[in-house]
Amino acid sequence: MFFQNLASPDSSLARVNLLQERLNRLINDKQETNSTEFPPVNIWASEKNIVITAEVPGIDPADIDLQICNQVLTLKTKRLANEQIDDHAVLRRERGHGEFARSIELPYAVDSENVGASVSKGMLTVELSRAAVDLPKKITVQAS
Amino acid sequence: MTNSVAERRREEVVAAGGGEHVRHRRVFSPLSDIYESKDKLIVLADIPGVDESSIDITLEKNILTIQAFTIPQERAGLRLVYSECPEGNYRRVFMLSEEVEREGIEATVKNGVIKLILPKSPRALARKISVKAE
Image (cartoon, rainbow over all chains, first blue to last red):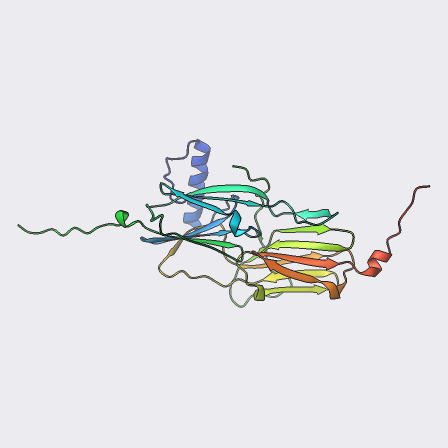
């Protein structure tokens, strides 16, 4: 993931891939990747807030399970394999189905009591804000 | 974790024959499923983030065109730091082999998925000759 430390992947192949991805991003000046993980996500961030959007077309909002634990957001979901159509032949099947899970490492601790999550038109939006204890605090220096 | 068929990603397409967009927007080909039963064809296409009023479906002769337009999103004070699903419009063209009853086409959208029901025309159904074994 974006916030991952370069040294953290275990295998050297993962490290090479990550480096490649970062170089591509640097050269293209775009934050895009060609990950095939489902659901695909976009991450928007500032010093105080993070907004994560994920494309979840055809998924019932009740089937989305979100968890936050130790600066890691885990998204679990499932999409049914098939339309309920009697006696049909499949001419084309491109849309993925099954159970999916992915974890996103967050750059700072977030206030887990204050998370907004909504689904609209097949787009999941998760809004997170930085935990108050994690915010930088300015300390005034007094002359004695 | 299990993810059975998720390797496919929607692909970016170059608008062909349809002219260029006035605003520069990328165009993606939505992932689709097509099912056929005795009397109808069913097309499902993933178009997350599209409002039902921004979908344009046309059938000209046997060319079915699905277009869907998204609204560019700005998030004040936030920077896009990682992107797997870039924004853009959707466009996909299918050539139908069976004759379709134009009057009976139904299109619905639910949770970002278009469902198109294309009933086969009685003429196409009548042409089928069943062969019986002696």
